[in-house]
Amino acid sequence: DVKVTQSSRYLVKRTGEKVFLECVQDMDHENMFWYRQDPGLGLRLIYFSYDVKMKEKGDIPEGYSVSREKKERFSLILESASTNQTSMYLCASVLGNQPQHFGDGTRLSIL
Amino acid sequence: DAKTTQPPSMDCAEGRAANLPCNHSTISRNEYVYWYRQIHSQGPQYIIHGLKNNETNEMASLIITEDRKSSTLILPHATLRDTAVYYCIVRVGLYNAGNNRKLIWGLGTSLAVNP
Image 1 (cartoon, one colour):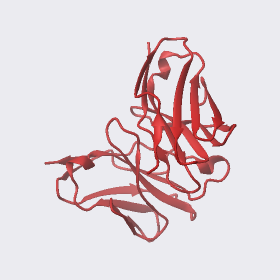
Image 2 (image 1 turned 120 degrees about the vertical axis):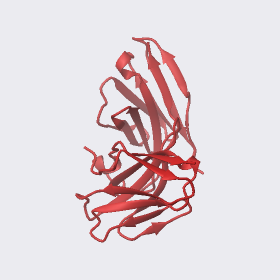
Image 3 (image 1 turned 180 degrees about the vertical axis):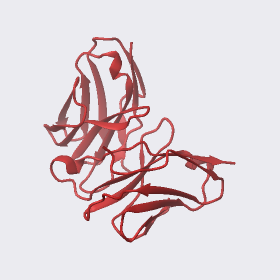
Image 4 (image 1 turned 30 degrees about the vertical axis):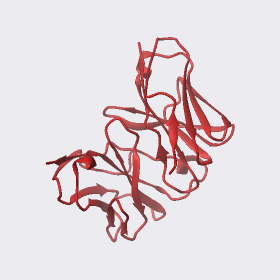
């Protein structure tokens, strides 16, 4: 089975900190995604990557950046965390036209 | 904007079939219907997908109307562990450049399976 692993289930950071969320997949998938999920808003795409060092903005990229130096790892970076970035963050990966596989999410709180 | 419409919530008795509807009246000819579910505190889990024929796997059945403007996900014998939010999504089958890679997520249907 495909495994998508997010580095933390729960994370608490302070306003202004630089925050790194890590995601690793073990099935050589070329496409990887970062979403955030908020009550009443559903899943919203932040960034996705279709190959190493390649990235495209999703629907809400402001305040975020990403890094994909290796195929299996896709990192989401909050350059200067703010309280409105408190959310559940979900990583997903996919091979070709197969369905997306998700990690279990990181619940991030910015104080 | 999400291209699908689902009821916000449904109830089902344990052991009975759960039929979850989805309206996708603007679906394009090359778009597939995907179903995912999300159990509390977990990431979404893929269930099933189809283009125009009905599909069945070990988890569920997918019935797509002939005009493809709506579909129904059927959990034949719902259990308490099927309590989750169910998402119906349409997208093109191949991940080409740009927006074809993205899934547009609505708010789904919150299914409660009752003992």
